[in-house]
Length: 118
Image (cartoon, rainbow, N blue to C red):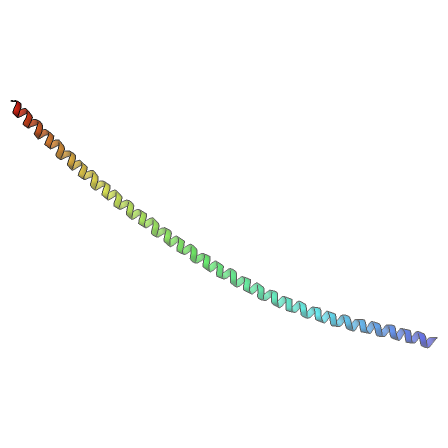
């Protein structure tokens, strides 16, 4: 009977040893999987960081181009406005000259009519 108990205890001890070995193997496997997962996660984070950096550079370039185009557009509008103002001033001068010439012609015509009446 003592031999049976010893055998039963030895078997229970062996099962415990086997379970510990199995758990140790599983633990090592999980640690390895966790390490691989962390490495992949870090690589993904680096790729994401690189992508964000690239997108920021593209955005900055886009904004700089937009600013440059806007400034050029404003300068073009200012040039067109200045040209329009100059053309308008020229037209005003021509209109004043024409008006002066017409008034002078009218005066001469009136003077001629008055001289013909007399």
